[in-house]
Length: 140
Image 1 (cartoon, rainbow, N blue to C red):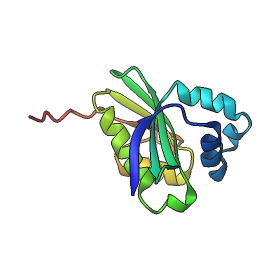
Image 2: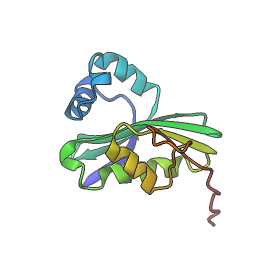
Image 3: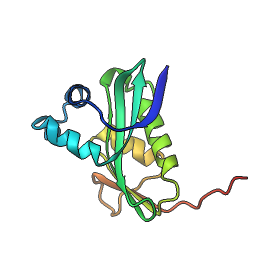
């Protein structure tokens, strides 16, 4: 069963394993630099029996903006809904934030973002997608 949790302090070996499996060349050059960047981000992980199988990260002021980047899932978990669940739980945590900006790293990620309400800010199809403000549901 896959567990989803906010974490910090991922090991360089876990980070390399996840990013290298997804061929994210922009990060592979310096795993220590990526680890430092992740340490200064809010990270939600997906783990299968302790094994890191996915993560999503963002940077936010917790009120007006959240910038999301790196929705990364191991290829063998890509059909299991892990990316969608990470995105759902992560954006729920930040539901009070006025604007969420997401960078879609590939076509599959952009398609997922669009399926949950993110749109491109212009008429052209681009990598950056923005979700308009949602009104909070007050629950008692």
